[in-house]
Length: 342
Ligand SMILES: *[C@@H]1O[C@H](CO)[C@@H](O)[C@H](O)[C@H]1NC(C)=O
Ligand SMILES: *[C@@H]1O[C@H](CO)[C@@H](O)[C@H](O)[C@H]1NC(C)=O
Ligand SMILES: *[C@@H]1O[C@H](CO)[C@@H](O)[C@H](O)[C@H]1NC(C)=O
Image (cartoon, rainbow, N blue to C red; front, side, top):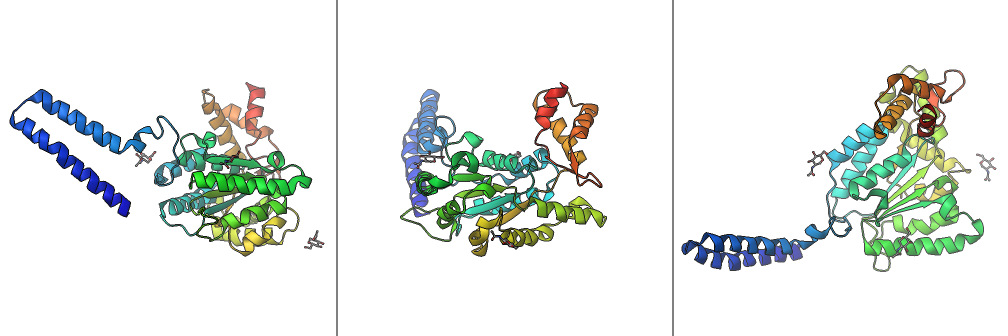
């Protein structure tokens, strides 16, 4: 803040210096020199805000102090994501709150849960694109896929060192770094221990502050719990949109905590409350799959064809057996199936 004021004061002095010759020129009424003066003034003030000029045009900059446009985020989530009213709401609130806080006490940690194809990867992409124009290609965004980046259990100690030094290195270069861990349920528990200190309430670790970083975990764990909840809700005759976060959230974190198969690793993170939000992704129904087909057609620049969307959606498998309510793969195979029809 002090530095900022000094900067403003400097700018004001500069205007005074510039204004003196301008006034002099104005008195002698020479339009050409006036315009030269103005051009010089704007060139110099432009130079003063040089970072604003080169960021985005010449090089990609770390967006540590850029506010989030939460309207744009909400519009994206509403228009591109189908059937996930809870995720829309939680993510928008979490991100807006975190990004507008100048002094967060810890990094933001979001854990997204749900069956495959319900939109977890898609949402992390939307989040990233709303912070960095280059999206997943940004050098400040790091994606780790358990089975790709950390496949061998025998190399866990090596992965652990690597991961810590990457997170440290990247966060010290840019405080607003984003780390996404896909297939979290397949990640070796030892690796979670390696991440845990970065998620905690430390002011800094060895001189690096992690408080403005964003960690996003994606996993299928808990998907069954969410689906069961959704089915109960449906069976009792209530509408999907009436489902509230409190109907799922506790149920989900307790369920994950007690699950010693896939969610086992989470114990310490949950126990110490290091995950800020558990975001449930609900199973998708026929109508949502149809919307996905239409969106895919639009994306390919083709005409929206209701009848085709109906046919493609009809081909997907749905469960449970009795009422065939939820798409087994969400919208995941929509694109491939569409190829078959075109
Ligand atoms: C935020 O996004 C909305 C919708 O995309 C847009 O209309 C508005 O101009 C943006 N605001 C700023 C400050 O960029
Ligand atoms: C940043 O992370 C990437 C992996 O996403 C890694 O390859 C790179 O070495 C890291 N950079 C630093 C400075 O640690
Ligand atoms: C997992 O939990 C169940 C009971 O909930 C228990 O019977 C089983 O032994 C546990 N498995 C392991 C590997 O701890």
